[in-house]
Length: 67
Image (cartoon, rainbow, N blue to C red):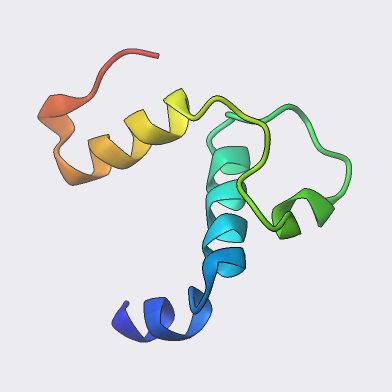
């Protein structure tokens, strides 16, 4: 995991692409017909509530909130 973080999330654009991917994967974003949205230089225009809940649940499932 540390190798992935050190190499794949090397800068802000890579971190934004990772967030965009996960937001899409959990259903935070609207349907996309292309994967071009992943490469936005910043996190896309999605609210973030579902992604935050998903990430927090991964850290401590007892802290999950309903979305």
